Length: 555
Image (cartoon, rainbow, N blue to C red):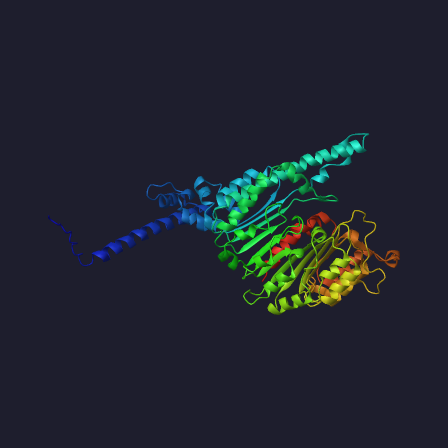
């Protein structure tokens, strides 16, 4: 048996050096060619006179056609990285090569989408999610339905018949429109979830879906949801996809879901692995449609989230046991806490398990930088007195009322208890009859709003609608806070004048008010003329959700 061995020949001295030098020279030639192409392109863009022939000669390298299309993909992507998203889209329309470079993963680490719940949005959403869903690292999607109630007026029911027959026609029109809204909503949600189900690089995931219209009988969306999906297949598919996304995630740091119908269930968070739960920094679960005493997260589940810096929950779900868990030594100090107090939750859940003042003191000792943001929807004064514990480090509070008005005693309590922390105060009363706004200063020596401005020295935002604000009190607020009050938004219909101011023929009370408030604030000021232009008044859910996001990020 013969065995042949291949003996390597010894390399001649200097061969490795010569080969390396050849590769370096070849690389330099390629880079020089790219630089010549780019130089020719830039000269062409500048349009130098007489440079056309030289530009064509210099860019005609290796037999390729001259122009922007000849640039390498890496260079086009690098140029795109300096452009905002709208300019990228316009630039990509120049040629097919640039269009292929538009959806390079490095260009779209963040994707923020705001959608109307309309069938026209579905093709665009499908295209965008098909291109970016598999690699995007931060995804924020907001769904919002137009107010379809406004499209159905009494006149739609016919001419003389404005009674029961007209109401029935109006109800049928509303039913057909809202069924279409919910059907489209489910399709859009499925489109988003399907496109990111295998994205293991997703770090921030935020969903918001304010498509509910409240009626006396309850949420209109819940009423029609069973008609759109009678067997519950789509709802179950959505819930399974959401849990699949959580189970597949490996780098999730931020999970936020607000007012989304039938997506998060009490068992959804169990899909997260312990490794991901231990590194989660923000968790937001806001949903007032959970029936009965069900909660989206329990104290036992919260023990896994040891690295939380910010948390947003329904107030009735934030129990004394949760406060105890957050004060444990194995948890990092909580920096931001956002709580939604909704009358629907208060009606179905008890306030007996909420944290007492000692729990809030322990939380504040654990984290001296803890700040709290509270949003209250139609909460009675007696319930607010139970909720507002003295030791809450309350920085922001937003009252939004449709039926129950905030009393002057509550405003006075807030100004006394939270004078060291309070920076944002929003007071809204969405009443239909604008002739009878409640007056917080009735039977009081001092107006509670003026006392709020006097005591809360850090107050930087004050927004009021649906409550009587006297002109002289508004001037006093502006003078007390001065330029530190960055935002003062008061609707025109909320401002009232004393009879003495109206009787003075020499002074225009409206002009005098604008002038005095502007002088007090140190900047031009006007009352809010168009309430529809401010989301804090027209879309309180969306405003709270966006403010909660920025509040949680501002650590």
